[in-house]
Image (cartoon, rainbow, N blue to C red):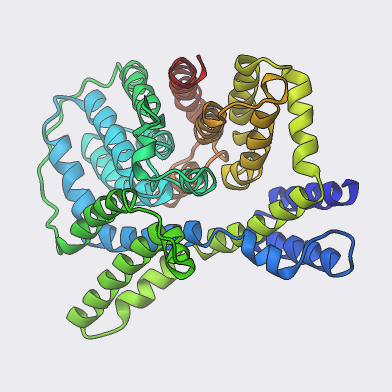
Length: 439
């Protein structure tokens, strides 16, 4: 176990220090665990390693990314944002509405993609109204991070939870007769409205905006809607008895996202009479995240086989005792703090099996349902990234856009919005989840 723990710690440290090479570090670590299995150190074969990879999750992420690329290219998000801004009375409400819009979009679209599609509108509005774009884009980024946990397809971490806990699209809204994590996130979003209105309380300049963007293609919008509808329908399909059909059934969500993505790409290529769209989608596909997750699935299975997961679970259990509320609190706020400095994707991927093992130890070893801990983990890890500029990829993307436009973003600029936004949203979600799932 000690050897596996050392390898994992080295892997994590290298991923933190050499972020550009994270996928290759994870894949190399996975290769080390496979090699240790071949040499008989652990009962870990190549088949075990490959079987540990959640291909459904990878296909969902890849397919969703492709559909998002087509959706952004159609200019539908830009038009929707302009329509919203044209209805508000002043800058304070314009920033708040734009941030909320980014949040709603990010419930169905990757957070970074959301920032990339909404940020140009924020820049244009800031320029037109002669206000600094820095707080505007920071508000967009932190709101995107909040809503990413609302649905199954909202963020990579949500997809990871859905795959691990076998949750379907509807489970995020209503599960086992109780409100799902979606409602905790939305209550946090409502709390964030008051935070943003307070932070921008002095920006009372009038707004005069027009709806100028023309949607070039409505088909990607139908693809986005179709993805959600089909994921919902798929959640009601009965599990087949045939082994072959069971394999397809286990991959159904990923297949839906991937097939709809391919339909959109092929249609666009036929219309343009070229392979330009395929190249564009391929170029914008976040291959690093997919490779990183592929490697992490194997690494996590490796440390699980070596007994590291159980040992960490025992440590958490010793700290919290047989007190579910104390454990839940520890998971939420430890996740907030850690995710402020480390990427939440490898963190959530690592912690899901830990949380599951801890839940099994509760009630004197009788165990308890892990959902309150799962939701606490996702809430803390998703929102914790808003505490610092480097805590989430969406924050880094927003700051990069600002710098390209000649703006300087100080730590103070970010903390002024990120800290109160995070604290209010986390506390509201924290209380709601415990009242619904922990009591």
